[in-house]
Length: 192
Image 1 (cartoon, rainbow, N blue to C red):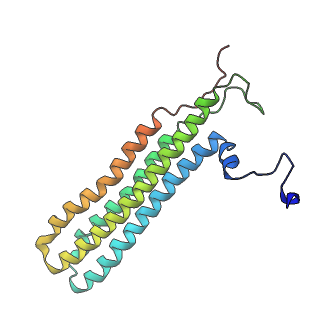
Image 2 (cartoon, rainbow, N blue to C red):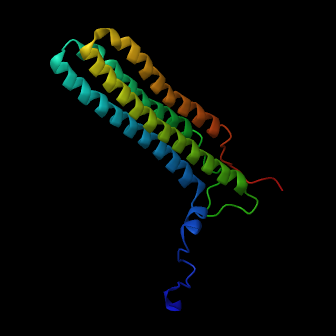
Image 3 (cartoon, one colour):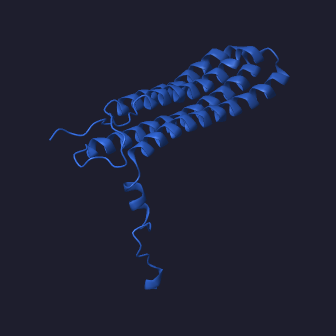
């Protein structure tokens, strides 16, 4: 069994080593990717939920087609929140002033990793919040289309519930902005 253990300096000892040796720039870019990607998935999921019910209910009651498109717009807003957060996070990534293979010994490594981890958490929280927002807006929009097909007076009442579901995405982007405020990549070594 001891022959299975890698003695080379290039082996991977596990997830802990992988995650602790990943570049902060990698964490920051994964945060941007997760924030944008999950937001688009949430929007697509919500549009799928709303759109399928809207098309089905419009067969019985064609008058609901145009005014229930507001539900699709609310779902699309979750993707826009992800794009906004991706732009904010991408503008926070700064490269060092002096390009070199290795960073100097007096580099601000804690600040460097703090910025990477902070941007990762900001992107991930925005993305996951927008998945929840997209699905909840989609479910509320589906209910709105079905209820409006039965009784036109229910449209505004259920639309208010849909607005509250859409507010989840706004809360997520606010939290993401607060999380990313302190994320500043160092561009020069610390003074001796």
